[in-house]
Image (tube, rainbow, N blue to C red; front, side):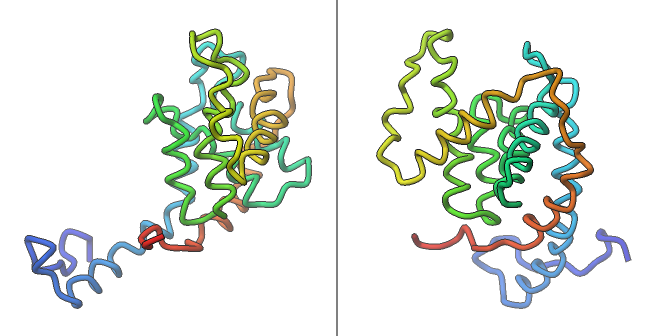
Length: 193
């Protein structure tokens, strides 16, 4: 049976939904989780060829960042965060870090989520002055417990990953890591805290 002919919820307003409606919706939506890794890979491939003036395209930058983290012995979750930190570049160029952080939030630690979410501001230290912005804007974040980790990510992995001569790992080498990290949410984003 195709999705068009599958049973559907009976409500037209959420406030009128029943337990049975929501059970049906949850069951029908499970494919979004099982297909997530492939959709993420497809979106990463959209970064290929998008140089945006950089010496390497956005996909190569992501592969370099993740390769450096992997070769440095970082754990799988950190490496996946390094790979996906700029995945929002194509759909959200004005707030790409927020988009990447939103994608990763249910699957990663609070520290890694914060790192991805704030890497754009922390990374600005290396170039904001050339855009007429305050390169020290990140100082407003310095007291946060995850600031040092984010500063290190930007300094050691992100800002150095624009090298056309660097030998990156392939996207295919990261697929098992993506599957492991994105296989099941660690937490719900729908909590009161």
